[in-house]
Amino acid sequence: MKWLTPYAPIIVSLLSVAAFFLVVFIIIKRDETAYKLLWLLVILSLPLVGALLYLLFGNKRTARPLKRRLQQVQKSCNPQPLPIKEAPFDGEKRMGQTVRWLEEKTQYPMCAVEQVRYYPLGDNMFPDMLADLKNARNSIYVEYFIIEPGHMWDAIVNELEVKMEQGVDVRVIYDDLGSISSFNFSNVRELKKKGIPYLLRILSKS
Image (spheres, rainbow, N blue to C red):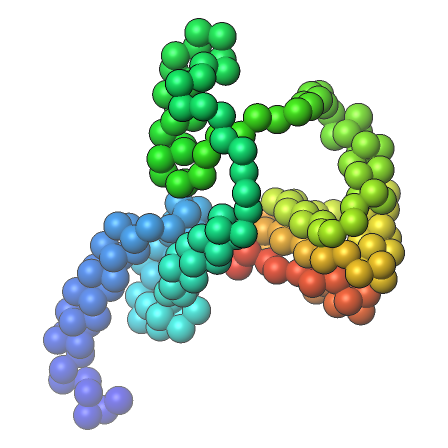
């Protein structure tokens, strides 16, 4: 440290320039806004430590592997797309344009849905959702932004455990930032003990 003291202004300047370019890189990078803002706050508050933490833990390239997996899933499916000329929105041209844009971006066609039911509250939905879980034969994939132990979640976990014993492919994904105050490591250990595969979206990054 004594040897580096005379060069302190130069070192600080270089670190500031490096932090600037790293911030610019994070801003233009394709990531979720909340994820980028969190890292920007860390780097701007503690430039050196924040940059090192980002390089070690934050700069994870998940987009390409995820895209490859989605392509594999698409190839394994056999959807029945609606005719390209069909207008399923009763003259709502804007809605039709939106759906066609989504089709183009996702490379997945819009498909007809046989039955849809609207639930104004989650309490109304829960009995039907639990019944669907009980009737599942092949797979159960659940994803939540916020998980909190209680009547609803405990009932879901119990059913997932039963279904796993029956050979159903069960998976859980949740957001660690959204569940930071309601779902702790002890709750995660409970899932692990039951053998339920889980994935948490670290720092709200997909």
